[in-house]
Length: 388
Image (tube, rainbow, N blue to C red; front, top):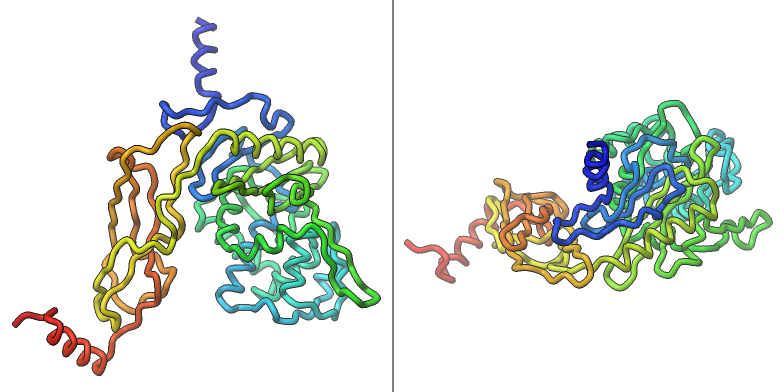
């Protein structure tokens, strides 16, 4: 009876979200030294490997993945701009841990501060950006936790934007992978996280040499981000992303015993993923899937597009089945901003739903007025779109 029980338990150990006929067998040696780890395909979020992935642990400076996400969304909303000059506060200048040696009263651009976060993991830089975007660090942290809820994360609670150990500050490998997946949708981020070395204040007597704490950016083919972390409590951590051909992966390892072990095990996870899967692109994010007439719109119709690329992940050597779609739109009327979710697209393989993604409009849809409505009706009469 005991042997039967052990056999049944062993069936649950290889973890994959592929259908049973496509299951990839997982090597038990992967991330053997990590307390927690995960490997996902970056566009679909499909889990290729996981180990204690929902265990709540100290994330150290991987916290800055969420911080960078909140910051870049604030930039895209126009709260701050890349070229804005930020005056460094006393509070930011006094941050311990990894720094870019900011001084109170010093002025630095948002772009250079972001570089200081992405490359050198500057605690002082992330605090300066937190204050610039939301006024205070506490308000910024509130936004971090709000974003975590929006992403449906259940293993994270942030108490600061930098990741220094603090009571009730935690995350998980799974949550970190989801945050990373969201962050790299903003392609501007990878321009910073892929930098291996650079300078701040170049040409001055306070020139500061930046060297990326993520050595995989230099030594692993295709790696272009994201963030390392270390504290006594957290151990050595890393969330990394790499792309080869059309396949992008995200790997996370938490509480590793050393930086060299961390880097080696993340590299092995990435090698495993690239060797095992194929990603089929079904549609690009700007592919028009339907023309839709919108109530009260000045435009004749709206072009409906996926919010992001429609991809399907399969084990290598596995062919796609018959792909069909089912589009469901909300009841909508103008105005509609590009990026607003207006419905969802179900992707089916052999009549089975395998993915569901949000859809939006390809360009802004403006609201009609009396004059434009008059000329639109005249046009419809002339072209035969209205029959009396």
